[in-house]
Length: 300
Image (tube, rainbow, N blue to C red; front, side, top):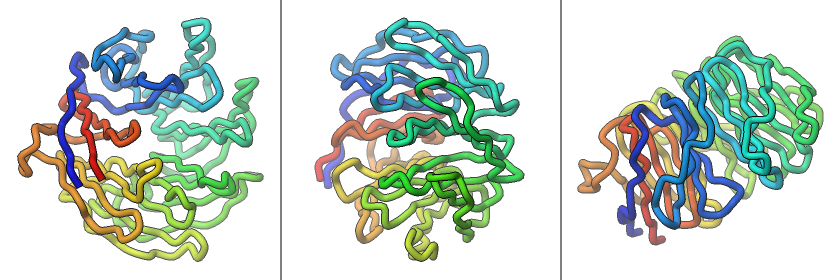
């Protein structure tokens, strides 16, 4: 596996927490402790514009497939809805009074899920933007959401060290995965739906068997917190980003380490915590506390 740095995007003045590809190819959005959501051209490798101003820090941005909308989760608990056709914020979803940490959609159900520090997940209709459900998932923060590929199950990574599972058909409780010793920051189902990865503040990545809800493997992945894990959309690999300033690429079949991207390994990489990743084909995008977005070309 070969990895080379392709380019950097600079301009943010504060740490970046959210990185999301647009529904439109070649467009990337980023947000964090700055005063706005930023649009970038990956083709031109350049800043396009500040989409809209924000009054609070942003931890989550989501662009649902098939909708001309972008949802932006704020530190104050609001979710701003930006309409690409009207080029303005048209709605504010108000259900949570504490920071929003993740937003995901269920295409088959036309539903939007929002996770908050209040321990609740709110469920919204994507067509009408009406509130459908509010689920008390945890007594503490819900940090991460992952929808299973078959859209039958959803996993929530929680600050109480657990991963909570729910059935997507009726949002009934489906079990809990417990082995982490610290807050779970990130969860993601494998593309084949057989496994779930969870990454936590304990620097571990856990591999769970979904059919049996059992721990398959525990990987001592990083030196510090695992902030994000993300499967490649088509290749049998996943990437992890950590507070230890490194990105690692792992096999999705054997869970072995194949590449470390860090300054220690000779890459002109991030100098502070890496908070979020995005795959744009075989290009891996990374961002973090050093205010940079870096594009890595990965050759498998």
